[in-house]
Structure formats: C-alpha cells, structure tokens
Length: 114
Image 1 (tube, helix red, strand yellow):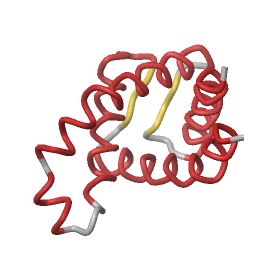
Image 2 (tube, rainbow, N blue to C red):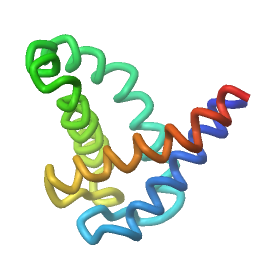
Image 3 (cartoon, helix red, strand yellow):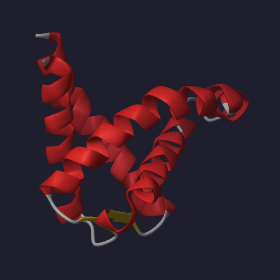
Image 4 (cartoon, rainbow, N blue to C red):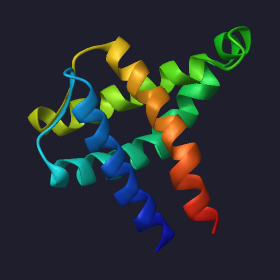
C-alpha cells in the first residue's frame, strides 16, 4: 500500500515539475502515473547497473554524477513513453532529477517510513 502511495505522490511530483518547465511535458495525470510506474521499474533495473559502471566518475565527483544517472533514467522513461512524456534535453532532465530527489526526500520518504 505504501508503494502505491509513493507511486501516486511521484506522479503528482512529475505533474508539478511539468508545470514549472516548458521542456518537461506530460500529456495528463494518467501519463504521469504510467511514467511514475515506468520510472520505478527503470530505477530498479537500469540504475544499479549504471551506478556500478560509472563508479569511478561518481567517486571523483563526490556523488554528484548520480544526478546525471537519474537524469538518464528520466530520459529513458520519456523515450519509453513516446509522445505522452517528453523532456527537451539533458539539462532539463538533470534539473528535474534534482527537484525530484529533493521533493522525495522531504515528502515521499517520511510517508513510506510512517
């Protein structure tokens, strides 16, 4: 049940970010829910592989490269969804990844713990 609440909150976060940036677009709330679901799958499967492959650069950047990895997972999710979810470029994806991480740390994580 907490996973579903986190999924819905991530969808709301994605919708909120789409209102903030012109280059980050979702076609609707249903697309946001599907994007949130796909993003959780990509984060579970692809992200650990990318982290291991880029470990030296992640150590050199003191972990800041993890935001780039999160941006790539967002871009991959957008590519999987087609026209329903689009991100204009890597810069927009990095800013969105930082915002998602910040919002999740203050909103989603406390709800999943409680």
